[in-house]
Length: 282
Image 1 (cartoon, one colour):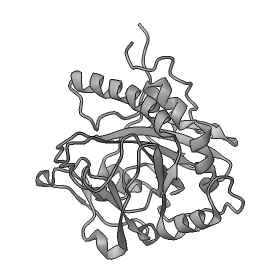
Image 2 (cartoon, rainbow, N blue to C red; image 1 turned 90 degrees about the vertical axis):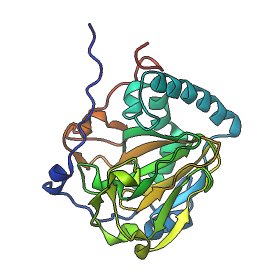
Image 3 (spheres, one colour; image 1 turned 60 degrees about the horizontal axis):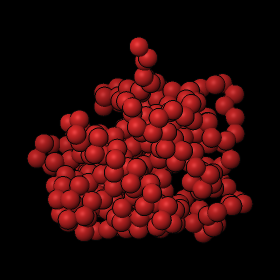
């Protein structure tokens, strides 16, 4: 009997509190970007994000959407939730193809530099009428990674707008460092388990509306959240996570990192191969 991939372990809040991590923003130092403009890089450094980046045409993203529709259907039929599709590049060959896609990684390299590791892929799909929210949080609060040289590319599989619960940012909040949070209460109906109180005090709230096939990129220290989807339309996005090779991950988080470009002299990142199948368990 074959043994499937061994996925990383998610740390508890207590474990994270006792880890020695550098959680300060490291601005991009790229001076000759190939895809993004210098103004976009400056915006990422000052505001913590860039958005509205066209990656795939409507026809290309429609093909990807059909594949993702099939994944979601299988997960829901097996009793999973539309938020439970983690480690996606370790399970699905076509998601591995997306995290390593040259169009996507070119954007990432314009911010992180030529040496890049892709370490995570996770679907966030709000079904029509989904009442759950994602409370204000920083990604770095969940990840046993150091230093804080990690970003997320959020690829819109469906159109994402205010009506169906698009992501929103607190512009500039990444410059505040790591912020205090509390454990979310059950009444909040939060997809995650952390809430940063009074997040709006740290900057201007910006709604990250995207058309299908567009992407945004945000720092792991940027406060972000999303509201419930009260519309009759789905809002699905694929988060692709990247860092520089000098970042160190514990609890097996390095095992899922793909060295996309550059070198990893100490062999810290696992560099897993492309999954043979497009659908887990087939």
